[in-house]
Image (tube, rainbow, N blue to C red; front, top):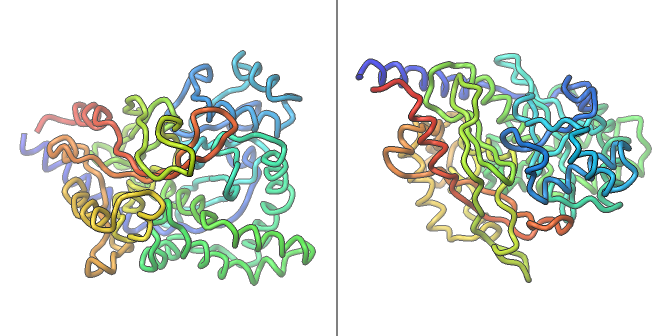
Amino acid sequence: MAAASASLDARNREVVERIGRSVVQWTGVLPASQAVPALQGRALLHAGPPLDGTAMCSAMANAACGAVLYEGWAASIDGARRMLQAGEIALLSAHDHAALGPMAGIVSPSMPVLVLENVTFGNRAYVTINEGLGRTLRFGANDPPVIERLRWLERSLGPMLGEAVRLAGPVDITEIQGRAVQRGDECHNRNKSATSLLIRKIAPWLVRTSFDREEVARALAFLDGNDHAFLNFSMAAVKATMAAAHEVSGSSVVTCMAANGVTFGIKIGGRDRWYTAPAVLADGKYFEGYSQREANPVMGDSYISETCGLGGVALAFAPAIVRFIGGSVEEAFESTRRMYRITVAEHPRFLIPVMGFRGSPLGIDVRAVVATGILPLINTGIAHRQPGVGQIGAGRFRPPMECFEEAAGELPVE
């Protein structure tokens, strides 16, 4: 009926209005167990929709084993694997607990998490600190250097960042995102400008912390050497934004997208259920010696970026990213133009200079996806399907249509 369509359109306008009004600030750093009550026992958060621990893909299972070893719950990787397979450790979807993480997305109780607050609506989101490049837990590596890096984040970088932001006062992450997208980032797989802007903002306060000069220098070098340092800030800012938008019931706008290496899932406004389908493989640029044959199906919580007008839906922000994820500059621009056909608005803050400062495509409407057959484009890193190898490339993919069809099928009949 026309009335149903009008009602959905009105609610969708409310969703995008909430997104546009949201201002998210970085306000602190906490141990994950203090931020997320569900982590006060033996529990881990993971990326994507809820997942049976016995069904985890190898990359995520390896990351979970590394977290168990890091927490001291087991003395070996084999021991950690036995605990997980026996169900001795709870495994929970991070998105269902106001948290998230890139790729495997594993969050354990002792890990420091960044606290991002939507000051417009009062809700918070929590995310781990980006581990840097190379072999990392989020890509399924868990050897001693990976565990030692996690412990350095816990004992040094996390507390240092927490002290610095207390001295500096809240840092406006939404404002940094807005500036970065006009400097060639899309704040998902390209964060070069945003990371630089963040370092400029926080560096004067890092040197004022109680940590000695050498440790501060190590922290600054670590941040400077990791162009993805801002990614975790950005994805948590999007989570805090979209959580506020999700409170509008009866919308057809996608408020969350994520994958766990087994299933890909979406949520729509006002509904807490996940609409899922089997996770797909990404197309992209693989490191020398690797191909899609070795790739793990997509996983990660950062895919929520695309629901907020960032990442793959707005490749025109960052045409240089094609060197990293594949494709061409022309394809990047054309892809963004197509995304306007499945979205309900343009982002009022994230403006695309090369498109005459048009706002990025905002508000993926499941009705439009089904009607047009156009799926959102998503950026991603690519992990090896075998445990311990880590990242083997980066690319892009389109999620399974079944998720959108199922969600659209539960909307009121127009």
